[in-house]
Length: 273
Image (cartoon, rainbow, N blue to C red; front, side, top):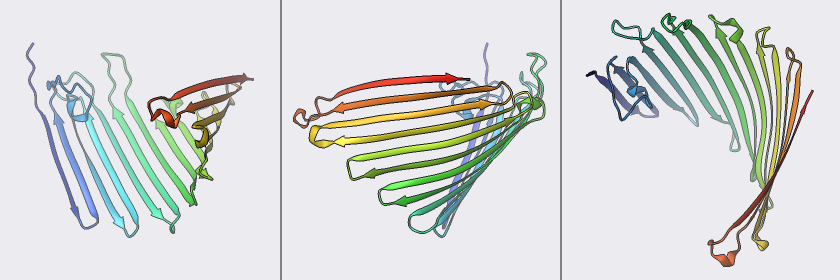
C-alpha cells in the first residue's frame, strides 16, 4: 500500500537587546511516514498540528523566561484517531540576592482534552495539571545549601479518582571540607493527597554520602546511607527501608592511570507495619 503525506515545520529565532524569542510551527499529514524518524520527535508523528513559543528577557541581573506550546492530533476527516488537544505553559524566574544567594521560582500548566475512542473502548480525556516551585540556594565557602518547596495539582474531570495534590519540601547540602572530605546530604518530605479511594500518602527520604580522598594512600572511600519511610491512611501502610553502601577505589600513582581497583558492598533492610 502506497502512502504519501507532508510534514512541514516553520521556525524562527531572534534577539533584540536582552530579549530573545524562538517559535516553531508544525503540521504533519495523516499519511505522512518517515522511516528515519518514527515518532521520536514532534515532527515525526503523523496526524498532528501544533507549535511552541519561547521568550526570555534579562532584567538586570535577573532572568525571566516563558514557554508556551499547543498540539492537536487526530479528529480530521481522514484520521483514524479521535481528536486530542494538548496545551502547556512554563514560566521561570531567577533572581540573585547578593553575591552568594540565588532565588529561583517557576510555574507550570499542562492540559489534555480528548474525545472518546469508541473503536477501542477508551474514554475521553479532560485532565489539567498546575504546579509551582520556589527554591533558595546559598553559597558558604566551598559549600552550598538549598531549600525548595514545590506544589502540583492534578484535576481529572473524567476520572475524579485520579485527582491528586502533591506538596514537597527539600533540604540539600553539598560541599568540601578541608580538601579531603566531600559531603552530600538531602532530606525531603512529600505529601500526596488523593481522592477518598486513594487517601493521603506521606513519604520521607533521607540520604547522606561523604567521600574521603586519602591521596597519600591513593584511596577514595565513599560510604552512603539512605532511609525511606512511606505511610498511607487508607491502606494503613507504614513501610520503611534502609540502604547502606561502601565503595573503595584504589588508583596507585605508580600505575600511571593504567590500573585502578574498585570494590563495593551493599546492605539493605525493609520494615513494614
